[in-house]
Image (cartoon, rainbow, N blue to C red; front, side, top):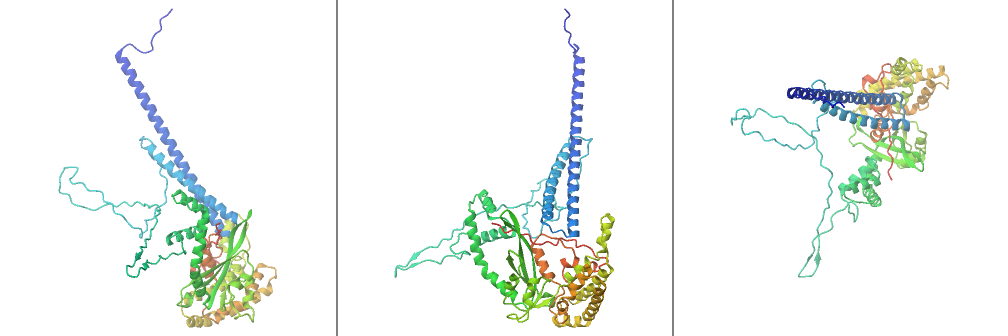
Length: 525
């Protein structure tokens, strides 16, 4: 039987050489593993950054399409919200993978760390308080040990920090005193509470109402968050405070209502509001009436009055303005018709037409830029009508005049309109009448012409009264600020009466770059 032989040499030097070779191979294998790990981390970071960039571009394209085509469907809005959530997750993953790749690249000199392009951060707001923490300077020079140090300057690094919300209970102590002479008991009066016999302070009530109506956070969610912070309050208890605070704020609301309804001219408009119903979502309405005297140099401050209704019946504006009479700037909604009726008490309301609504009907038929954009994508394009193009240019000439008199007093505005705008309005009426005779009554251009001709008395009231504006954009701006839903399709509908010059010409008209959002407040339970 043959004896087993060892594969290892018996010589000590040979064993040392073999051990050294094994160590070098292990170190090389470890370096290769580190390099492969760094390359994989870099590739993963690059892939995550690419996915985040693709998601960002998709969201941007979806927003631009929504602004261009004016899609106001609830499904489109939910789709954009979902894309924003996905983008947040992808950007968070990309930042994490970027740090992992950077950490892996530090372990090897052969792999360069992937650098993701990050958005530039804006400086922190100036109104935030600053706490200055000075790192102690050395008492002597670290290089030579000398003590003669002179300050050359300083580097400041700012870090944003937040103080978590803290709760406290305020104890108001009212001491009682007894008179030794007359034996009467004296005690200071109880402190003021927003809610009678209330336990909630004004700051807490303000936060509760803002979270419910400003941030659309239902009371049950607020109660859950309060409980996690160590303060347990039931939903019914919070609801009682909301009702009591609403009652306490009612006098302020009445003061605002009285101020708005004291105006001689109002802007009126309404928008949709989705509300929860049994197994579905109903569409309610949010009505707004705006007082804004600044265009004719009025001294009274602007204000807005909101009303809510479950539908859009005409009885609501009649109820809202039952005791008011004056000039109403609004769209052609039929529900306002009863306000304009002769013999109405206390007096008929004067109707003032909105040139932005009239212009939009022609603008949609003369969107040269939008048609060219569709044609470049190979999409189906609508016909560009020269009549619509000329109509927009004629209306824009009126806006040119308005830009020069905006903010002046009533007399100056009226004089300029009589001199400059009245001849243009006469020419516009004759031109619309002539074009209507050449068109079929079912054509979109004919409908746009009839929209103005049938309400010509409302569109010409601004020639006799310097307080009237050309558009109802004041109400639309309030609704856009209040809400978050649709997109602006016409530049003039999303901006003040004095629209910028570059958005004026119909031949060079551009889509409004900013969202023109409408209301989507969902009343919380």
